[in-house]
Image (cartoon, rainbow, N blue to C red; front, side):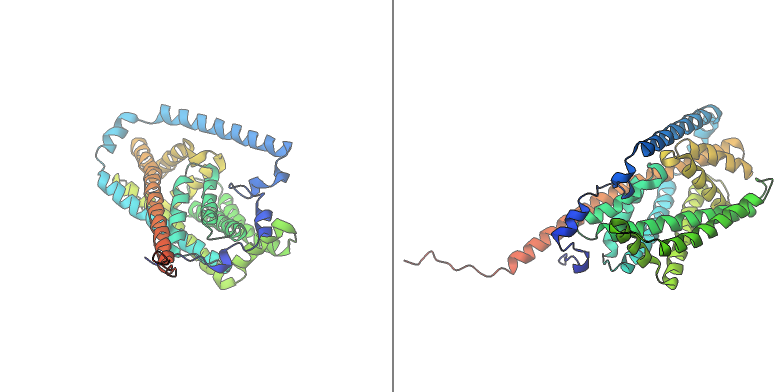
Amino acid sequence: MQNFDLPAQNVEGSPAADIREAALVSGPLECSMPALRTTGSKRYRVAAMLFAGLVFAGSSVYVVITFQWGPIWSALREVNPFYLVGYGGSSIILYWMIRALRWHLLLKRTDTKVSFFDVYMCTAVALSFSIFTPLQSGEVVKVELLKKYGMIQRYPGYGSFLVERALDLATVLSIAGISLLTALKFVLPDRSYAYFLIGASISFSVIGICILYRLRFTGRAKQLLDQMRLCIRSFPQLLLVTFITFVSWSSVTLSWYLLLHCGSLSLDFFRTAALMSTVTLISILSLVPGGLGVSEAGTSQVLVWLGFAPAAAQTGTLLLRSYSVIAIALGIVHLVLWKMVRRNRGCSSGAASFATMPPRADTAGVD
């Protein structure tokens, strides 16, 4: 086992830097700023929680009342659990690896060097447990995990993370817009909504980049923006991470395709992408953690639009919910494995340090 040496550029070198970062709590950067702790922001949070609660309650009641539970359980008993876990688990791990590759490249742009293994393990753990957080905001934990182990500083971590979220939003909007023009074109009476989504994606990307380069701040905000600019300063690099983002969401589509296939629901890849992007946007707008209830109601309705009988659509909905269960189980496995690897690294490092110590003089026989 090789020694674990932290790169010099990732180590916080001065007490002043630690003092400046002491005000940042282990949660998301935005929530740690005192300026946000105002009466107005509290009202917005309460309003958002009430809205999410009402949406969750209404969706849950809809699912309980409208789902045909008898035929659903009969269909689920025909599903091979080994295929479900095997196909679903493999596609989830593929998704995590692609996401880790993207973050690894973005961190390199900020001159932060972390091994791909650590980035992957951290990404897997964070993504699995972020499923049941609003907007999957729990993914930000990956920054704090690597920060805790001294592998990165906060500003490069949060800067690259915000770039990731922006790329994800633009990608999902684009896929949803294209889907409404193709696979789901019969859903909208007016195709202008689809053009609006595509236009919003392009405008969001262009305006976001322009604002990022024009904004001028001082202090922590400046450091954060500087790291974000480093991530996108190279146009070929930006194209590369954008392509990887599309590939990552394609892998999510593959996961949904395989899970539906396990339930004998034949849906081609492009329609599955339409289903995935539409339901993802619905879940995001609902503000409900994990889209519980909302995702089930939306998924079953879209599957009915795509030509499935209600009972089959509802069965497919529950099969897709197994994605979350499998991901959380795999996340626990990754967390345990990562802890074991880190413990072994620590033991190896300690043994190597002991072996390199100079021999101590034996004075037992000296008068």
